[in-house]
Length: 134
Image 1 (tube, rainbow, N blue to C red):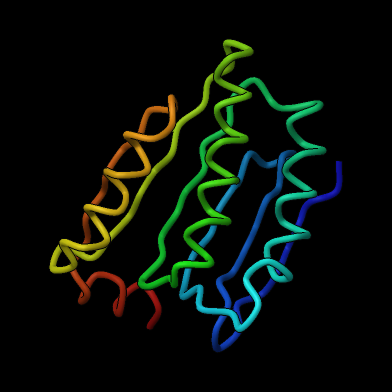
Image 2: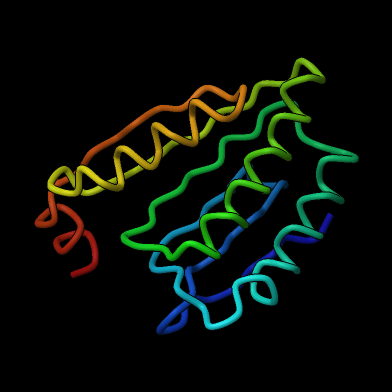
């Protein structure tokens, strides 16, 4: 299966889904003008992946901000992970958030409550992220 690579934009996150290298990441900001259109390709790709998944799928989500319409699309994606979990596959979500952003932590907890997939919460300091970029 071909990897899905969508570079980040001013309003859209970077998406990298690469099953060969076992990389599934969403990071950045997600405030597209039309979230349904932006996430359509992502959700279609993931539907195809669910039909023939890896034994292990770890989705890393590291969003600094997202809007309501993006939130709905992310939830659809997390529900797809439920399907993998029901197949007894190794599935996890790694939810990264700025340690000062309690709202983003709570949103991750809300998602974890809504799906049957285990979540790992990893906080970071803004300085750590700035040094990683430099």
